[in-house]
Amino acid sequence: MSRPWILDYDTRNCTIGAALAIVGEKWTFLVLREAFNGVRRFGDIQRRISAPRQVLSDRLARLVEAGLLRKVPYREPGQRSRSEYRLTEQGLSLFPLLVALLEWGNRYAVSPEGPVVELTHRDCGAPVHLELRCAEGHVVPSAREVTPVPGPGARLIA
Image 1 (cartoon, one colour):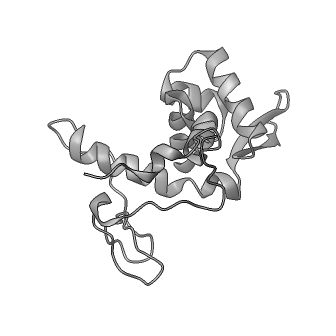
Image 2: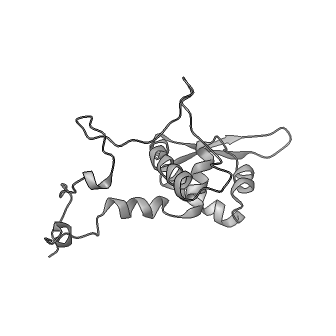
Image 3: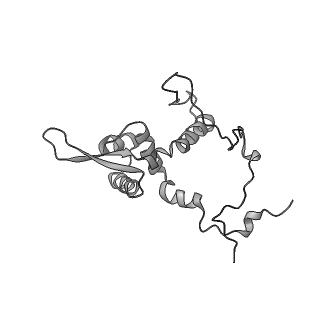
């Protein structure tokens, strides 16, 4: 077997590592799950994910700072002004990642009762699933069908 070319390249500018620095933590993914489900208020998010108050506050601040969520003020009658957290376009672009985790969990980490959530297309009601395709439109069924090649940001190890 030949030596993988990737061993000659530096990983310090890896985009997977950069993405994980922003979203690669359990509470962050659970906050994003709630945002995709339309849960926007701090108390509702906290109740749903059972995160300690300070942890949730920190995760929300980091997601806002990273541009994945935006704060929108609201005020209940007789209450002080508060903020809702809504997905930005950048945050919405993470949807395929959450769908991939959901599908993996529904296949390998599901309870005996079955999945808690199944996704359906709003227009027709058909099940939604994630599918990889190449730029030519071919379905890519497995990682075994993909060849990594150096990208423009790849740097040889000095």
